Image (tube, rainbow, N blue to C red; front, side):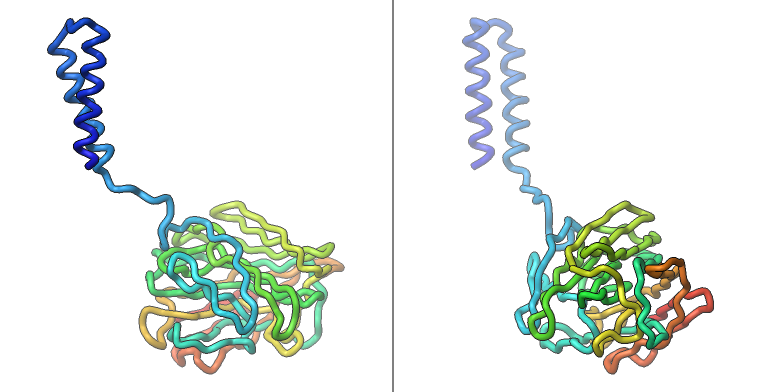
Length: 297
């Protein structure tokens, strides 16, 4: 259909040119008509290229999810929310859901203005069947669970953030697993700052990005637990891997960890083990004296 239309259009153009020139330079007009027909044929017969696809790495809009409701689906892929450990859900739609990393080794709550860490993405893009998060997380004093890092989002590394509103069974998660596509083998610094009723999520290193969120908090609350949930943590949260019961194909190092209190800083955190029952037994956690957390998969 496109080729026929192009030939008709090409002939029409040639006839119009002939009329305008009185039939002079016939050879040039014929050549021009042929060229026009070929170009239009190629244009109309070429397949359409869409600006985005499930794994194109295009920005993902902020999603919302309320406990007990179906998980959001984007481009045919389920986009699981990053949730506190004790609120893990089970579903036949994914292989496993587990956590591994470091939990802040203090039962004394510390009011903090910022937390920051540097994490390097995997050496290549992740497996297209994998979906997991690599995050730094903490609650604020209004009960919002604030998280920042990246995800393995069905074949790409995606900048990820999350915050919450409401409480209990009415908690609403506001999140994106891929607010911005990140490059493989690149170190990014992730910083969460809470002040004046808002959390600001900021990323530097291979990119420069920030987003404010109206959490209602005036400071972070750093401890091992907050209201019964894991609080200040560096960890990977695995929802789905290409091999049943498996782990990510990359290791993740959380370096340059620090937090700044409301009265000053920076301070180096100390960590204790954060492991859940479904975590594969071969995962190795290392906590270094300089505050680094290393997850060896």
